[in-house]
Image (tube, rainbow, N blue to C red; front, side):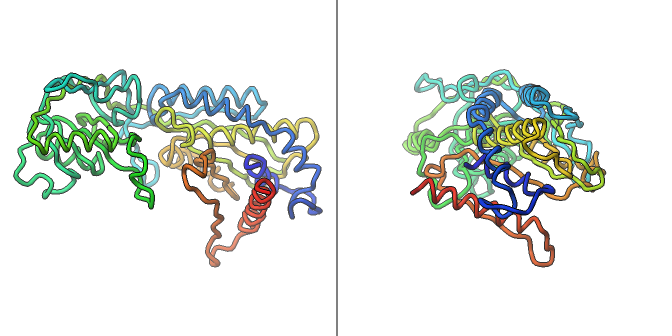
Length: 398
């Protein structure tokens, strides 16, 4: 039902007959054709394929994911399919945005060597175990608890030079304070996810983290769960001396932001474009964030292209453009290098984390209007979209 609603928005923005029954903007025959053709199985296959890749911006697997999406778009008969690459070198600017560096990781393990002998974190088994933009290391050091690790007070009376610090605050800030300012060797982080009413409910989750994407001289950080961190804090508080061995094979390096684009051409080149967008990047598996959004717009593209080609939907007056970029960075680069496309945009439908189980994520669906000073017909389309979703949910619940 949700995918069908996503498809409804794109078609509703086109020049179609006003007579409608199930919605205020789309004839039943068109809506029924979309719903009948949409495939949850194909979307799921895309989620699985993307989830198998560690899709950090400017990494080899991110590029591989771009080629996968482009290949599927070509197979689905979309036009103008391309993978465009823009410098990600820490220097090139796109408007007001300075590009990040890229990152490549081969392996990373953190093990306690004394008084116990056990693996703490292993990149080969869990990609988020190693923070993005970590660099190579091979060392053994004491573990020191610095609390949050993000302020001077956290380090009062503690000599952390040459140690690995256990820190619960933002991992990039903890790296700056402990490693760059005070000479620590690296960070063991239990950084929390976004603060919510249910933060801390999932003590075994390992939050992905990243160091500064602008610092080619980063050391390293490993990520562990809240439960693991509490165990280490308790042991350190009892006076145990804990020794850790960190071995990392990774590098921060110049790379590219790879943006996949494709179109369904409209009948009127002067009418502007409707844009579907998402972000394709995320750590493995990253199924909901955001393989789900990338999969949905790919399935939207397939369905619309097929139905138009078979004459079951009219060709749109406006061109529909599909964009699969790196989050924020790729969008900034793409629009800065293609101001003509930015000028042609009439509306954008952005899909981000649309596959989550709302019982688990405690998510809600909401539609936000533009301010009255920026009135647009898109608000009315969004309202119809929201009504369709709510009505579909009501029927399902009944």
